Image 1 (cartoon, rainbow, N blue to C red):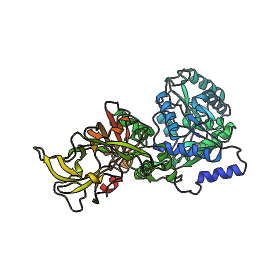
Image 2: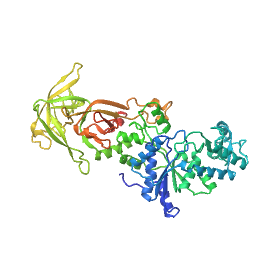
Image 3: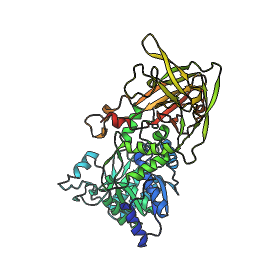
Image 4: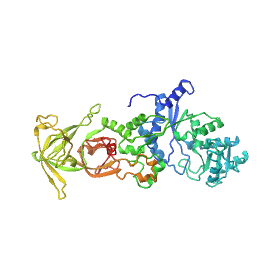
Amino acid sequence: MSEERSLNFIEEIIENDLKSGKYQELVTRFPPEPNGYLHIGHAKAICLNFGLTQKYGGYTNLRFDDTNPVTEKTEYVNSQQEDIRWLGFRWKNELYTSDYFGKLYDYAVILIEKGLAYVDHSTAEEIAAQKGTPTEAGTAGPYRDRSIAENLDLFSRMKAGEFPDGACTLRAKIDLASPNMLMRDPIIYRIKHAEHHRTGNQWCIYPMYDFAHGQSDSIEGITHSICTLEYVAHRELYDWLIEKLGIFPSKQYEFARLNLSYTVMSKRKLLQLVNDGVVSGWDDPRMPTISGLRRRGYTPESIREFCDRIGIAKRENIIELSLLEFCIREHLNKTATRVMAVLDPIKLVITNYPEDQEEILLGENNPEAEDKGGSREIPFSRELWIEREDFMETPAKKWFRLAPEAMVRLKHAYIVKCETFEKDAEGNVTTVYCRYIPESRSGSDTSGIHVKGTIHWVSRAHAKQAEVRLYDRLFISESPDAEEGDFKDYLNPESVEVIRDAYIEPYLAKADQRGRYQFIRKGYYCLDKDSTPEHLVFNRTVSLKDAWAKANK
């Protein structure tokens, strides 16, 4: 975990509220709309809301804001629940705004009875014109002064399904001259004849977010309703509705949402990437969704640490993606099993090693782990696979890997000296021939020979073939949302490279999706859900170092 930090402004408010006795218990909520998969921005809100009640006691509700039947699905509800559990949090109550549809309708009736709401048959364009501009007051429409009895009758008929979509709305009657445009008679109910994922066709009128949000918070006794900064202007309406209804006074507080470089966070744009086939789905490992990060190999610990490091602020800013990558590297360095995999293979033949001989070497699983991670058996034989980049026909200065007459250590094994090599018709090196020093075995080296280079390898006779997917950033622009034109114009054409003929040590044949692995000298990897016992597929979570920053200086 990161070093102990000072309190953020929300924690200061909560500590003061609890010390003063304003509240006996802290109650927060995480209220996602089930219209898509959760992303890394939601992870920040999740860690904040659940983290506060972990720190100060009380509890957090999970409430699905399901007030738009057109875009919401049970699939999204299930995925969001899975993501929250995976991040390590548990909610006290699983609730839905649709649980309160009857109560919210009653609240709307109360506003009508108080002369504070009216049914309006104006079109969307007419309502927009009636609201005026930020510098000019709005004007009353022809339906604003309907009688309470007429409004109650019309609202009841809206509920009964007498009117088609868009025929009328229910608007709060507040102040058409308010400097806050949201207070100029906002719409609080609209007609939508669509099947709801939970209530079916029971309802054909649905509350707007601004009406449902504060009242749902109040019904649940939420003490601190924490939103992102775009809801600052909505707070006045939030408070007005609670005051006029005379219900539990939940309070709204706002913090800066997460903006991550080389990423888009809009669920609408993420859905577009899915629908347009730019990515394979919501859990594509290039997506900033929690399910995509999970599939790519990110751990809940690394995401929680990232959210802790970026903190809670009142001002919007862009967080570097490299910080998220740093957090996963830090965690995997301490937890991932070290293994050997060759992604661009050429053959190495040890000419003085007996053809029929094999031996079992031991490799440390993770020397950085507290328990050292144990060890695993690694088969060794006369013929190996090594990386093409580890041999150079004409070595550069300070080249410490294989070259004619050069010596290197094979990781966990022996020192070898290159004798010669072969090429194919196109001039590509295919085979390197070496001699080994029998006395140089790792752990019992008596050769007295010291070499500067160590390379990894896999035994050709024992290696398993695998597909390896090298993922990179989905966008080439640091701020694709801020660029001119279509955000998809800034997609990274090299966001994934698929290697179909990689070779891995046999230990990885038993890999599962919970495992995390460091391919020595290559990066951190995990097993993908597309894998089968006959066809192993590994995803690169992150490189060993921030190669992107170096390449783009």
